[in-house]
Length: 415
Image: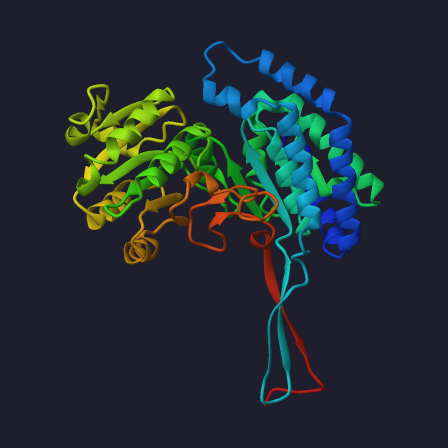
């Protein structure tokens, strides 16, 4: 295993040097070819995905099954994501800043690839295409390590990406997929600091905690997605009903799903009962504080643990707050710094919330489920970062670059 992973690291490093100087036309041709291949092999992809799903143990959660599932629509979305990424400007070589010093030196800050990126993920086979394409378009070689539960699906998709690279005349080692389900591969991958420049983990809390503990390589990570939607005293009732229902129930197994609803006491009697009724009607279990329980007998008492839980299921916790200060304080104590939204027609309240809430993404009158690279116009995303260094929020093409300084002179020497 050690030799396998070291060999992959060496190949990735060599491919990254070639890819860093590849033209946009070459990269886009590979992405478009891959998209065409994915569309042309949809039945094979679905068959591989069915093999993966049939191998799941009976105890597998609905959220896990949904993350693993590929449908014709999801495969087409994957192919469209490749086309969308191809249509985006090349982030490599962008002139970020330029200035001239009194001595005549011209200094330019230019965007360059990070180098080699390792992506470790669970369940979602579409990550193979999204992450592979984003790393590739931004000039980075990538080593993909998908979960054992999506091994067949991911291997099929990776094979089609390799064919796309071959058609464009670029090394297939630009996008590599770890060819084993052995968990030891993760441990060896995390030691490859000589070859891999950054690790992007996507998965459950236990996986990300393990990677955090073991990695010798810097990480773009988030541990969980405890997202909040706050119904302010000046919220529009119909907007609140529509947005909350979408934020919680559109897809409950995603990290951008709202897990806690906060509601101002001023509108708890007029807006919150309808919101609760909408959620329960859609099959959502509502857990609430005492004031929320008093509004609807179907509300289950919330316990302290609920405010710190990422359910990834049709369950939501609800709390009535005295005002925006208490809402912001609650978010500060319990948020995972992923995505929070305020629903209000009061622009001053919205501005306060957007300025004071310390999360990667803060929203006004919009569903938290819009926290997504595709929805942000990035084509796709490699993940969501909730840390502070280098990248935060959806990680797209620009976030997968760093920069270097180019200095041009005419024979200047330093006194």
